[in-house]
Length: 322
Ligand SMILES: [Zn+2]
Image (tube, rainbow, N blue to C red; front, side, top):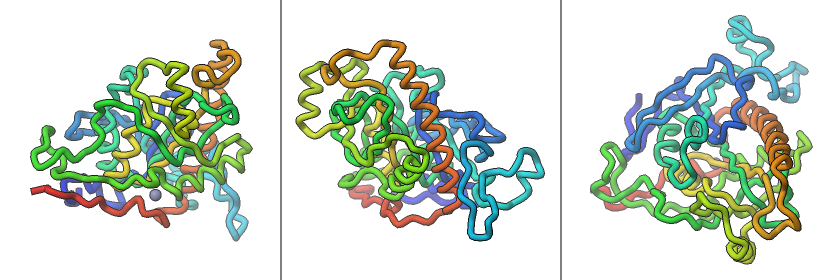
């Protein structure tokens, strides 16, 4: 372990770090995407977090050939020979999968321990996070089954722990000291959003390039009047879990992007509500598309290494730490 900076975990040395992570629901995790999967319990100042870590494997992650005509698909085969081959930087890249609601959707939206989740990823050495969110649509243009690459949010949550910085005397032992007013003018990483948009286009998945996410406190759904208000305020989709996760990721200088998956029209938007079987159908199609999208994007990011033109990685300014 290298030294931490300002109370924030610096993560393991670069060579041992797991640089990429996915935060999502159970439908997102695809066992065939990873090899040699292990479950790690990561201690954080906010409690332990269970994370699945594995190496990028074959399947769903084929990439274009490079200039020499050599196929750079991820993992030419399985087993020790493939692992030791060394062709293609993506093969063997470790990826962390974190189930936001815990195993078996055990934690309701308003009680998700976002601070522990994001801290755990940082302490593993994660630099880039792809997140998912199941959402209702406020717009007739964004239909069930569509993806939306979020670029803004409106925060209607109440009383959630939305910062790591609780002043000079933090309540949680090991938590960082001080006060941070983090800049969230552009809360989602532009680099990651670009890769996601390009890859979705390659796959032929309907993916809206931008959208404003309304985060409600939940766990109840919204009234029709609330939905009308959110739409008037400029919201495009509504969910319960995306905030403060995105804010906390920025506090720890992580690149973070979120793909919203439209599962239904919000209250009062559609002429008729979806039937249960329609919702199940949309969810299944969404999950398959998302796995394909993330598989390709993770491989592309692994091949690209740590190169980035965004400014997400700049450290935040901490006031009053002593
Ligand atoms: Zn970034």
